[in-house]
Length: 91
Image (cartoon, rainbow, N blue to C red; front, top):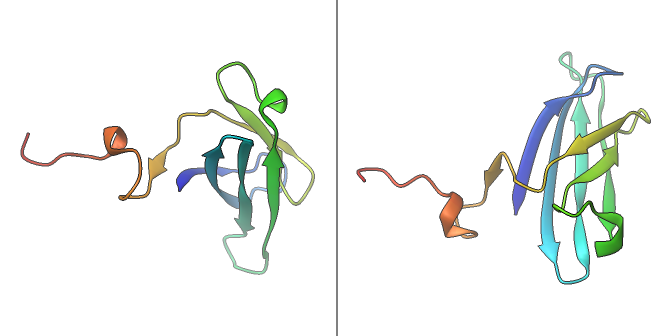
């Protein structure tokens, strides 16, 4: 699982996106929450390969409707995936 975090420029909620690359494209979900926690919701998304940029970047709409662009390169990745992105301590 790959992850991005940001703040929505429209509703100012914190946003996290988790996603996986699959042969059939990219799928995942967007989650948003307000700082006072009065908003906490989300939505799934899926993109076919032809809907992605040449680099694999994608745009997901926040629940408020604001389009947010995300690069294919994640901010973080689960420990059991993509060894090349893990931090190697002591090296």
